[in-house]
Length: 319
Image (cartoon, rainbow, N blue to C red):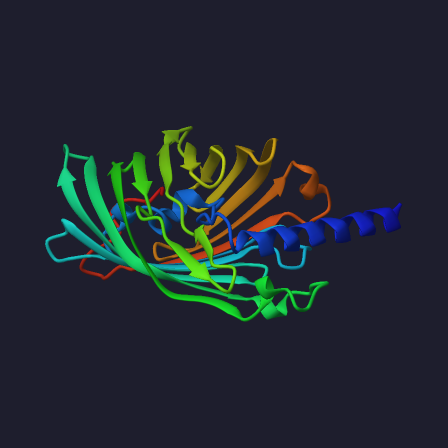
C-alpha cells in the first residue's frame, strides 16, 4: 500500500512538472493567499496608509509541500502615510516560483483617502511597476535532447503593468475591490516563435466585519471573491475569533473550479505580540486528488509597525 502511494505521489509530481513546463507558454496568474485579510496590500494598492504608521510585512507561502517544483511565493510590503495622512505610499515585492519558472515583481503603491463620515474612510489606490520573468529551459529533463522548444532561457527582464483598487473601511469593517494588473503582457521566444499571453487580469472583491462576543472575544467573518481570465472563479470564506486582543484563530473554506469542481479547507492563526509585532501562520489542504498525496500548503507571516511615542496606539487593528 505504501509503495502504491509512493508511486502515485511520483506520478502526480511528474504531472505537476509537466504542467509547469507547458505553463511557460500558457496562462499565468497572480498568487493566492490564505491570510489575504492581513496581506491586502499585495493585491490592492488602496490599502496602503490604512495602518496610519510605517509598517512592514513579510509573508511566505509554500504550496503542495512534498512535491518537487511546487509553488513558492514570498512577498514583502512596506507602507506609510504622508504628513497630511490623506496620502499613503507603499512598495510591494513579490517572488513567485513554480518549478523552473521564476517571477519577481516590483510595484509602487499609492492611495488617497476621502473621509466618508466620522469613522469610515474610502481610499482610492493606484499601483505601477514591472515583473521580471525567467525560465531556464535547459534544466528540464526531456526525452528528445534536440527539441528546440527546450533550448536556452526565457528572460523577460521588463514587463510593465499598472493596477487600481478601492478600499472602504472603518475600525470594524472593510470592503475592497481591486484589479492588480490591468495590462496583458505577451512575448515571443525561440525558433518556434511562441507568442503567448503571459499576464492575465484578475478582479478581487474582499470584505469583513468584526462583532463583539462578550468582553474578551471578537468574531470576524470575511471573504474574498476572485475572478481571472486565466483561472476559474473562486471564493474564500473565513471565520476567525480574536481572544483578549492577543490571539486570532480561524477556519477557511475555498471553493474553486480547476478542471472540475474542487475546494480546500484550512486554519489560520495570528499572535499579536504587542502593538508593533505580529506573527501569523496558515495551513490549507486541497480537497482534490492532489491533496491526498502532499502535505498541504503553509503560510508564515510577520508584520512590524513603527509607531512613535507621539502617535500612540489608539485602537486595535483588526485587518
